[in-house]
Image (cartoon, rainbow, N blue to C red; front, side):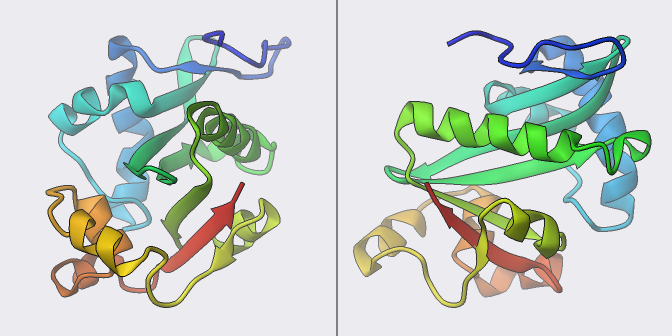
Length: 175
């Protein structure tokens, strides 16, 4: 596997694995979306701890997109923190980032992808479907309850995270 699957043309962002030096740019990209409650705000340490899950899109030295693949179980992962800069909306960059994460999921053997989103049209165009109820068997649900990860709690639709997820749609894609 290479660190950059899609080379950049002049004016086209390059997508690559995130590096520690990208955290400041990722946080700057996410901040306005977190203020609008479109994405969850996180401390810098959370980005460093999950950095290996991230891909970023870089253009002229600036982070203009990001997204993460967080493995939740043997066959299940979550697409997290998928964002593009305002000047990149509508360019297809979000779709490119998502497909990189989908390929990462395939590369490691994940068969289903989950997301919690307001952007249902975007994710539907990329093969996701809205789900109701649980997407895992009872025994896996019981194991996932042991996780401290807030994203897993959101996936499980636990009451304690509902104020943070109001209006979001739970979606799933089978690879």
